[in-house]
Image (cartoon, one colour):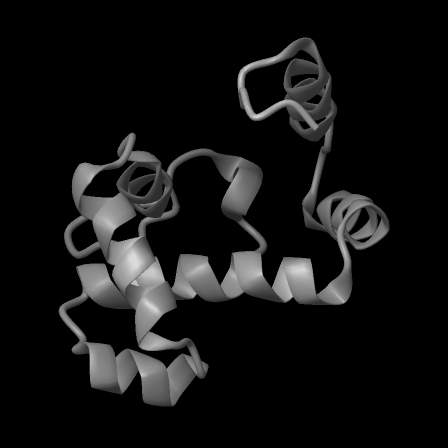
Amino acid sequence: MNNNVHSEAADRLFDAILTLKDREECYRFFEDICTVNELLSFTQRYEVALMLRRGLTYLEIAELTGASTATISRVNRATNTGNGSYDMSLRRLGLLAGEEKHGSEHADE
């Protein structure tokens, strides 16, 4: 696969993801497109990002998630110097202190 993340193929994939209507469709899509381990890695990284933003230590995060310190460090670097997507989505979900969920798309949580 091309090392350039921005591509027509990536655009098609992201457009497909944007068509998913609810959590159940997301489960079905990602269970088809990812291996179990890939999906577990994605979810673990997202949980690590949340825990980092909530001030947990690497040791606490490692104990709670089973993530390696290398994974925690990688996620920490992304949350501090990446594109801001972790914080953006955590805020939108109301998972960061002082933030609220918005819209009805999360009413079932």
